[in-house]
Image (cartoon, rainbow, N blue to C red; front, side, top):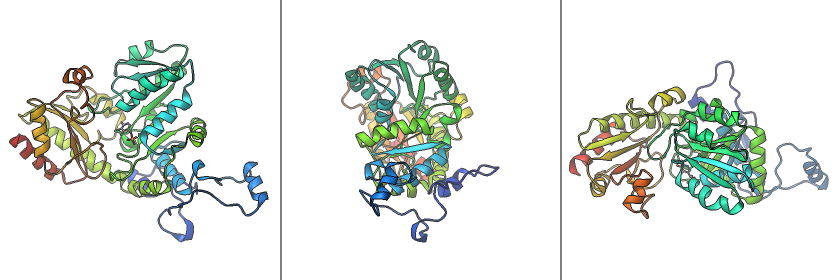
Length: 400
Ligand SMILES: *Cc1c(COP(=O)(O)O)cnc(C)c1O
């Protein structure tokens, strides 16, 4: 089950790894595809077999569904192969992964630092939940590495950040971030949902743990919710034992969908990177567009670091239209191909106005304080034909 494809002398390419990585060559019943083991529990031939299991003599066996599932293990081993990680653990959602990681690494009297443009629910958890358990939080401006280092105290255990960020595609220097953590013996955690292992592999820059919302590019079809955490065997073991108690596990069917979705992962990423770059360039030259936020544009402040640490720049393009909240809404409404929806990373293009989607309950002033402009649009590029997406955007901007 764990005869993951080990890269020979020349590492296998990302598409070969997407198709074959992490899966045994021979599967149950000679099935070509990884089967769904839809069970809540596992049986034992006799008492001795059970005792052997609890005595640690039966490697790979599982005794109850909350502790694992064979389909889940294949999905995890495929993701570990793609990320070049020692181990991977799947969760019921990205937030299930992030919150469990933080609970596992932090305890009463410790301190955690987060950069200010991290995922909104992650910051909410850090701000509103962890102080209830006696855990202290500092928030530092993203990109200010001096502030990050200055914020470290003797009680600091974890640095949390993200790259690229939502919705502005800000880029964190992963090598520098990891070095600060190592110097102060503090664990570093990166939410790499927007990058995916196709575009960046933070572990290779020295980061301790990588987290993904697998609901986005990894699943890739807007049909599942899951989360993943990857890192060293030791670190993942501690998180796994907490998950066994708190229970935010992934369902066997979702694990199957993830394995299935990952088969086309590299193909999808290649297309989404390419289309997003073309769309960003088109928008940058459009008279009705005030600003474009995409790390693949040389004008983007994170472009050079992104070039160093990324294969491509991802599938999300954010841009500001000339005008106000309503002008931007008219552009969104005039697009015929992308659906208006939250989320990103699937085969269908999605479009949204952050001021009306994730930040609707805030006032314009409150939104501006955290940098969310009314005229901002986030375009999460799918795998449709690039020319069709650009032509559709062109007519929408013309009509708005
Ligand atoms: C979606 C998302 C999450 C949360 O993941 P869920 O699977 O929705 O729980 C966390 N971080 C980023 C960057 C995301 O885009």
